[in-house]
Image (cartoon, rainbow, N blue to C red; front, side, top):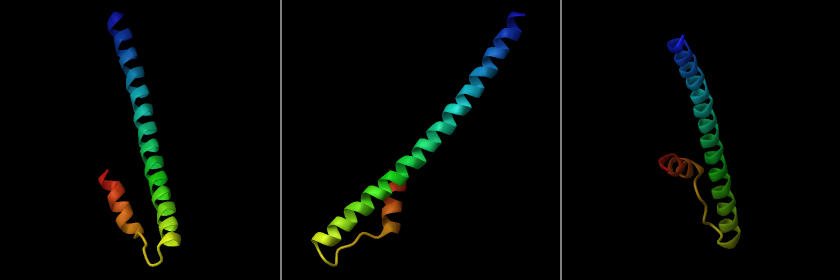
Length: 67
C-alpha cells in the first residue's frame, strides 16, 4: 500500500514536471519573439535617425538563438 502511494505520487510529480517543461518552452518562444520585435523596433528607429543603416533580420535571429 505504501509503495502504491509512492508510485502514484511519483506519477503525479512527473505529470506536473511535464507541464512545467511545456510552459518553459512556451515562455522561451515568447521571449525570442519579443526580442525580435524589440530589435526590429530599434532598427526602425535607427533607420529614421541614420539613413542607410539597417539590421538584417536573419542576423538578428541568429544572435537571439545564440543567447
